[in-house]
Length: 134
Image (cartoon, rainbow, N blue to C red):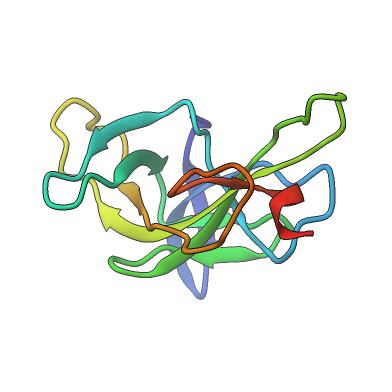
């Protein structure tokens, strides 16, 4: 996870964490999520929960600043490749939640993924590929 740093935002000094920009076009602006940072599973519905950000401000795949808030919906991506080595981003949507895990005191925000409801070729409930949208 990238280091957070002080950042002037709307007249205040806030903490920002830079996220990766997309190397290939996405379906919409999304925030980078490291899908290797699974940290919990929601006890109520079994949804995966990931470490998301150390700061309140992140940038999306197009470089725009996004202010994270409790309960906000966020679309996320991570770089991936198909079987032929072509870029095929992993995609998901979720809800931003304040970190409740004691084992990660440096992390301020988590993201709980939502079931996507798409009829995707991957068959996955929470994560799908860019190619599934074509």
